[in-house]
Image 1 (cartoon, one colour):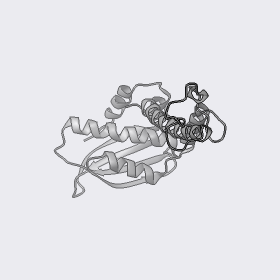
Image 2 (tube, rainbow, N blue to C red):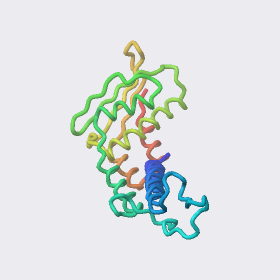
Image 3 (cartoon, rainbow, N blue to C red):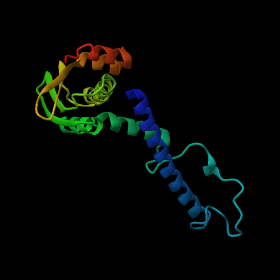
Length: 195
């Protein structure tokens, strides 16, 4: 799933939750206006009120803003949410089938060492590269990722080298901007694989 789609899905879920919370608050306020408590807005006779102005599509939050404005605020909060180096390593560990042995970085270069299976198929390796690319894409967009490149090395449990790959940060930036596709990014990165 590309980052834009993922972000849209997350914002969509957040908006539903936000609207759900506002709707409950509006129902509660409605009950108080109708002189009832917890009966879903029924009047004393048990009948639904015929005309209710709060049935409009616009939901007003506690601060007087509409839910649409609150969703915009939520989007700004997401953009300000920075990914730390530790969060990057944790996210890689969560998507990688093997073990993250080490990660070192300076301002321009990062070096990620993973422990993997020497007998892994090309398909498994490509999937692992794709998973790590997705995490690195988020790190470049939301963190202080290395400005030049991420070098990845895979080794066996006993330290024998299996292979290496290089991810240029400029490729990730182009992908995040939508200048290159996920397939183009993957092909560029897989073109750097050395075994």
